[in-house]
Length: 139
Image (cartoon, rainbow, N blue to C red; front, side, top):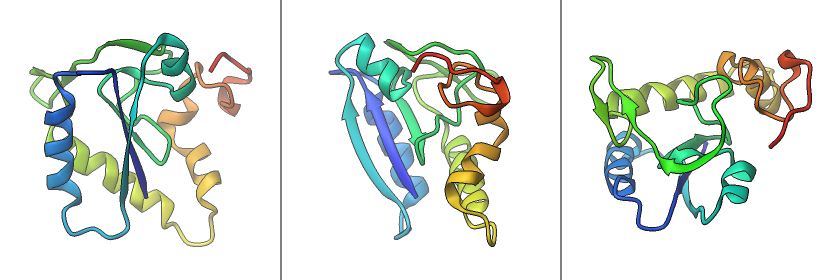
C-alpha cells in the first residue's frame, strides 16, 4: 500500500498528520510513505490535494468530499464527535487504511479495478477518470 502525504511548504499540521500516521502504520511492512510538497494551485489540481495536509491512500484521498475542488489552503478535519482538527484522528486514519487494505486484498480482483469500485471514488465527479460521473472533468 502506498501512502502519500501532500502539504504546502511550512504547513503547521503536517507534523501532526505524520505523527498520527506513524502510530497507525507502525510495524507494517506492506506500507510505504512518500511526501510531496505542493507549491501552487496547478500542482494541487494535478495531485488532487484538497487542502494541506492531505493523505492519499493508493492515490485516493479517503477524506475528500464529492465535488471538493483542489486547493492549496489549510485543511481541517472533523473527528467522530464533530471536533475540528488539523489532521485526521488516529482512528480515522486506521479505518481509511484498513478499508483500502481490505479492498486491495479482495481475491481475484486487480487493485486498479478495486479502486474504481470504491464508493468515495465513484462519487467524486471532480475526478477526471470517474466512470460513475459519466464525464471527463478537470484534474
